[in-house]
Amino acid sequence: HELAHAMLAGYGSFPFDISWSTGLTEGAAVAIEDSYDGLRSADELSARSLQMKLANGVAGVMQPSGFLSSAPSLSYVLSGSFTNYLLDRYGAEKFLRVYKERNFDAIYSEPLTKLESDWKEKLAGMQTPMDHYDSLRILYYFKRTSILREPCLRRIGKMIKRADEAFLEKKYALADSLYAIVERESGRIKAIRGRVLCQLHLGKPDAALVILDTTSSANETSNLAALHILRGDVMVLAKGEIAKATSEWNEAMRLELGDGYFTAAFMRLSFFGETEDVAGVQKILKDLYGVEEAKDKYKLVFAIEPALAQPSVSFYKARLYLYVSYIERTGKLSAAYRIWKEGEKAIYDYYSSLGNRIEPAPEELLFDRLMAHKYSQYSEAFGAWDHSSRSTTLPP
Image 1: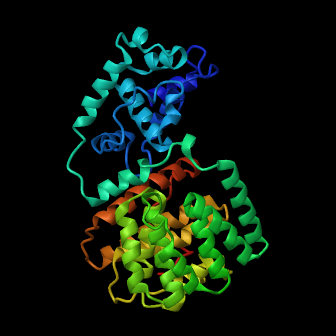
Image 2: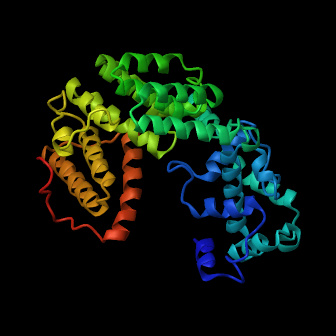
Image 3: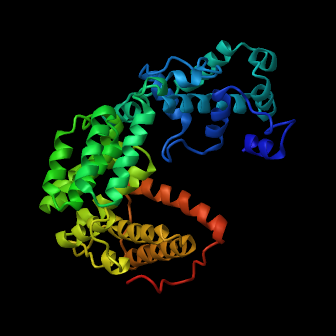
């Protein structure tokens, strides 16, 4: 916050003078954010990357050309964490000076290697024993190829553009063949998803499932969460197997690879996973993937009922989240904010009226935290929500 205020105040000639150190510019940007991926801080991710020996420090990243020498995501996190350390210990004024002059020794009266050593010592306390998901999470973010060693990005970009154009023209067989080339050369999840969508639009969900089960990129850490979600969805579309799909969605949720993947998996597991209305879930998935559009999103979502007479709170939260997501897609953010707040209050009022003691699971608590953070930003834009209001847009 101190750095953000100093930037806005235009300390010295900043921000009009551009630093030639990418580590300083991107480190400042990451430091201003509350978290790196919506779930974890740059400090936590940096500590883990050092612990797994995917990085040995930050000094190289802070050099003018060092930022691009390793995986970009790793460089961002390390520089952001190091910037946080400099700000916390020495304040914004000195950082803005080093941002402009790039002379660590003169401004901090310490060489960069000593500053790096102190930063690593601070992070050492966060290096606790790791489980399977901790390891996969760090590999997902950081075990990637440097930009300088990627396949020809221009060629890949052109191929994806041609595939996307063919898809929009409904030339699904051609689009699939182009996406297949991109997948083979780069393993990109966009290409795999494109192939799956082509098969779904061709009315071949079984073929989509075969692609997911045979792709050489299936076990790459960078694709894990997306592929688990996609495989679960296709299982339902191809075979109506919600029970099997829940294991895929659960795996994606437990990986916690960013707020987008987490909330997508949480919605599916808590909403689709708690109903026996296979046809209704298939309709929603076809709508989400653009195979068959449903005009009435309200009816589409709220036609789904829970299998249990006393469903979990998560079922109602996940159903509400999906409906509000549809509203947000139309650009009606103020309406989405109001409906979320009304619906959330109605859910808790209902369970309180039953005399039930609500004890959320860890996954639900994380979902609640993400939603609270998201809608706190909405409240800043649209004003505080009136807690006495009652929903006129949601079913009881």
